[in-house]
Each structure stands twice: as C-alpha cells, then as structure tokens.
Image (cartoon, rainbow, N blue to C red; front, side, top):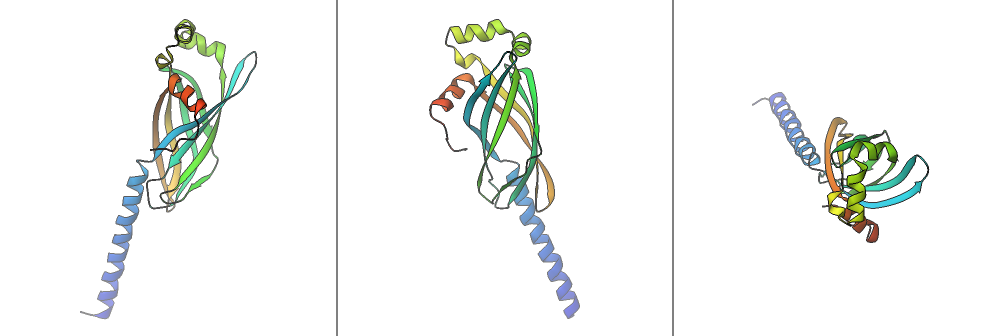
Length: 174
C-alpha cells in the first residue's frame, strides 16, 4: 500500500473517530441534568412579585459546554404566567456543574385571574401546597465544539418542594 493511501486512511479514520467522540458528547448533553436548588422572594410591590431562583446544571458530557442563553415559559398550575429569556454566557466544564440565577417578575393580579386565584388561595389556606405547581418549559441554547445545540427543558416543581428548598437550599442536581 502506498504511503499516501495510508496517510489518507489514517486521516479519514481519525476524523471519523473524532466525529463519534463528539457525537457521543453531544448526545450526553441532551440529557443534561438541572434542578432548582435555591429560591428567594426578593420583593412584593403593588403590581409585581420579584423572585430569584437558582437553576443548577450538571453537564453529563465529557465535553465542555457553552450555554449561550435560555428561553423559558413559566406556568402556574398549567396556565402561562411569564416568558423568560437571557443571552448570558455560561461555560460548563466536562462533567462539571454550573449555577444560573434566574430573576422572575410576575404580575400577580393578572396571574391570579389567569390561574384562578380562589384555587391558589384555597390551597394556601388548607396548606395543600402540593396542589400548586410551577412548570418551566423551553430550551437552553448552546454549543459543544462550536456545534450549536438546543437542550430542552421541561421541569415541574410543587410549592411544597419550593418551600423545602427555601428551608434547606443548595441540593445538588441529579
């Protein structure tokens, strides 16, 4: 076999192996782990409730991930409340953990009308916090090895779990 052919086949094999390596890393990224690990009531005024929650991400891939932002819709008991988005850059090392603080501003009178304020108030009055739940749906935008990747987010948490987070914050994801 000619030296040129050997070099060509070596290059093709190396590129193929690198492609498989990157493909496995991107596939693992699609199963990225995330949990709300902290929740804080910042302020309430006449129109809005201001909240901050911390979303902790675990990169299950062995490749570095660049998160370039997120787009989420927030639901309260399956009723749309607010859209959130950010273009803040966050780098997560291979098999590393990152923390993203997400501010939330909710027009509570409008939300109570949409969701059914009586249902929420009754759940609070009866201390049935498991009847109130918040859902995040959307995507993280990012890249692995400069290849754009969108990671779907579909996260549901009850008010009971949020209260537990407020009492004992900073649990690790997955």
